[in-house]
Amino acid sequence: MKFRMVHENYNVANLEQSMAFYEKALGLHEARRIDSDNFTIVYMQNEESSFQLELTQLNDHPQAYDLGECEFHLAFKVDDYEAAHKLHEEMGCICFENPAMGIYFIEDPDGYWLEIIPEKR
Image 1: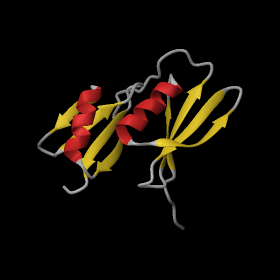
Image 2 (image 1 turned 90 degrees about the vertical axis):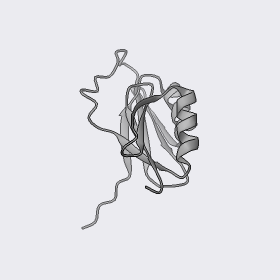
Image 3 (image 1 turned 180 degrees about the vertical axis):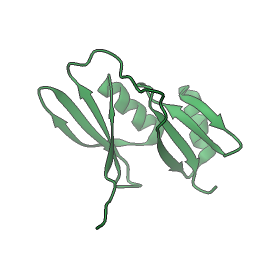
Image 4 (image 1 turned 90 degrees about the horizontal axis):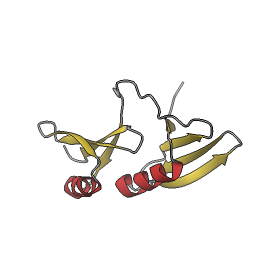
């Protein structure tokens, strides 16, 4: 039996704002969309992987999402670590750096953390 990861879901408060963040910060684009009366789901991905980030906006959820202690994250390897760090610094979304490990984290508009790892480490 073989399992293959296909997507990770994040619930978001403002779908357009989140899509713009992921496009600018990580080069993800809309791959497909599901619209219903109760929610909209957009699957974001790039050409580097078939893995998708599923962004879900619930129509009747006006409050911010409780992310608990945020002890989870999605990681991205990047081929140009310095350029990525500069972009994320300009965006003001770097929330934690660990120079000893050679990694840092960015935070999306809803508070989700994303780890940035250099391709060659």
